Length: 139
Image (cartoon, rainbow, N blue to C red):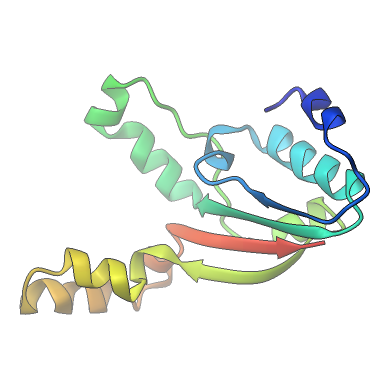
């Protein structure tokens, strides 16, 4: 993904919708922004969607014993989705959905009243809401 020559094979004359689920947190910030910049320069318009992990979440996941055993290292955390608009001038944030507070996920994880109350309380904390987000940009 960091060798951007693979984009040369894609015609650049139509709008695109790029989904980068499970990718961005594995890239270094300079490589991720270079990829996003190249996409926005190559195509006339489009949208980008990806799951953005915060810096705290990338550190937490990388340190978990089970993940460390799998030799997985998350690198890039997006703490402020608007920072990408500054780094990639054509990008405009159009949607920022906190993943951990999505009703369908909470319903699945909350097994009882105490658990549901805990998810509700945690969901009010900006730190928790920003751990994992679904981000969508247009250009």
